[in-house]
Amino acid sequence: MQRAGIPAWQRVVVDIPGPAFEPTPPRVVGDTCPDVECDGWSTAKVTLRSASVRGERHRYYGQPRQDATCAVAHERTGTVVFAVADGLSSAAASAVGAAEACRAAVWALHAQLDEGRPDNDFPAVVSFAVDMLHRSAAAISPRQDPEELVATTLVAGTARPGAEGIEVSLFRVGDSSAWVLDLTRPRFHPLFSGKTEGDVVATSVTALPSVPQTLEQWSGRLAPGQVLLVGTDGFGDPLGDGDGQVGAMFAEHLAAPPSPLWLGHLLDFSRETFDDDRTLLALWPRSEAR
Image 1 (tube, rainbow, N blue to C red):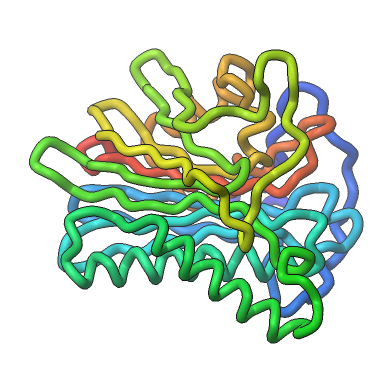
Image 2: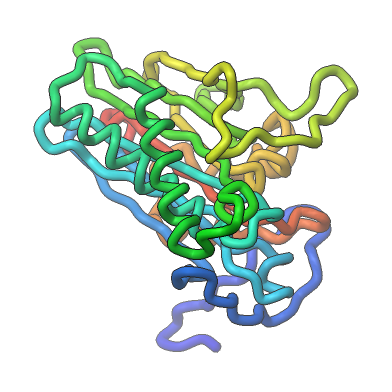
């Protein structure tokens, strides 16, 4: 329907679309979880946009969105604290786990900034998130293994304004990932290793509340013309190496910060075989926000 000359938004299609159907409402598992969630704001130095959408598979089967994201600004330092999580489909209440992991990581990092720490203590953040996941699992089903209930990936970190730009530091547990989008080429530079090693595709995922022996971390500075992207594999899988149609679309629309609603609409693109939940958080240095 069109009113007052304003056209209704049409679903974004990349290549061959997936099947069209009206989504079924998600079952409530521990908490409510909307189909689509988006956020957007700016500090003096950084512009943030984020969106999380329920995938076609979960829409069809009436399952909740199992992705989550959370971000806050630390008022005194101007640091942006962020987290993205992807609940494992094998876990019965993974939507709860993803949301709780994001909240716990952001709270712990924010508390470290309050304490005036010059560097992030990521192992302490992971430990706190694990503790909160165990608490959540105990509240849902005290006798069930937390890994069977609330298992989730997690990427979290900070973007701190510095004398020479925005200093980014982040870690991950699981197969969610992060990229730096170089707008001058454009190219997507992955900050962590991918799912494949040669021709072998990894089939197992280390997920909280399990803790990996070695915590993957990355630190660096956002240069002019670069955007930090943090996303779940629902975004990363169709993106691939960034050289295809999905990469071209996002490089075009992320050249400047879009409206939060437009990012959510864009992220909800239809493409055959890609039906997972999708979450993407993007950070631009403020000088790049046009």
